[in-house]
Length: 441
Image (cartoon, rainbow, N blue to C red; front, side):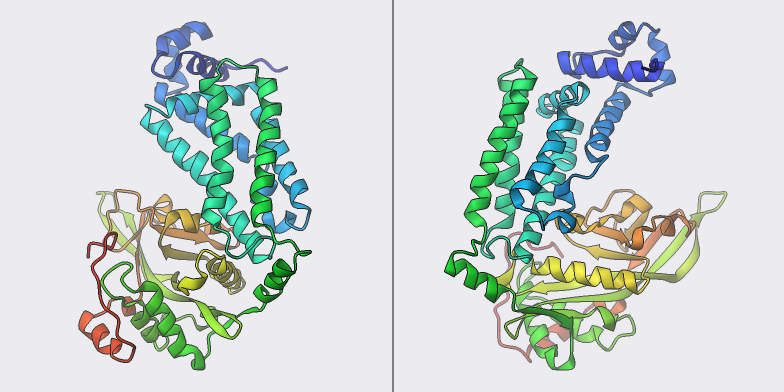
């Protein structure tokens, strides 16, 4: 075994001490003493105790994701029996968790999440959020592939599955601590497997059951195709109904969809609908916005180096009939059209929306690349404004050589409320309502 260097010793000793005494109960002086170096020598390797903690949490995530689990590769693995599919992912997780260092780090973040805001955020986003999004994505795909019933509540299913395993971790590392780790891991595997079977059996489609078999046959009667002129009015009604009183009293997304078709920004080849039994139940649009790029000069002043010349495609609006929401149809449209966008050599796509939803498709905060939405604070992260790099070419952003980018939606997105009201006269009357949760605009 190779000898550890000083930084590795500091890292390992910190894990031991944090797991035994808590993060706040350990000082830099104690870490240095255990390593056998001067206190000041710590700072040759880490800026602070907090930076040691950050490196520990990063190590944990990198180790867990080093070899992607089958649960995060559903398309390649869902053809296998679900019990076998689940076991592959479970075995990998337990194998990694059983490593002594990983067990200690797990105890650190579970205990410290009660009073350390940084760790609380880490657990919420990197542990819980990531896992539940992954399970939601998996169950949505299973619904699309007619493995589970269409009326299954995907979010509740994902949460019910994941939170049980998380409870067992808390039970072991906090309530029953100290407890034999090996015994716990065997018990953990048995209990989570049994729990999974109960959940899965409650929603899976049994082809031997005539009712389930008929449901599977009916649900397969759906088509994803390009929008045609004959669909325009139906699509506008669909979009209007989907957005009515959601973000504001009334809606104007249907007006945007109507105007986009005649606008130069419109990407006709990505305007798709999903049709079920001859009924349009979903619709998606893409268009080209403007991306202005800036680079600082020697005086720190932003100088524009690219005036909207970069191709900047944006996804939306996307709408699903309320009767069919939470059934994976939106996911189907997004995946289908993103694949087409890649085939069209579109380098990246922006979207404005719920980060928890769009993360499953590979979108990430655009502020990671110093790109911001027009009118938002360029000093803060804007999690709702996201980008997906297509074809795995992350260098496409770096090659642009800029310090800051500002994205502008197509001008057709800027609507006049009076014109929307006039356009609405073409549709059935709906009452505008002020509701809790609407945007403050």
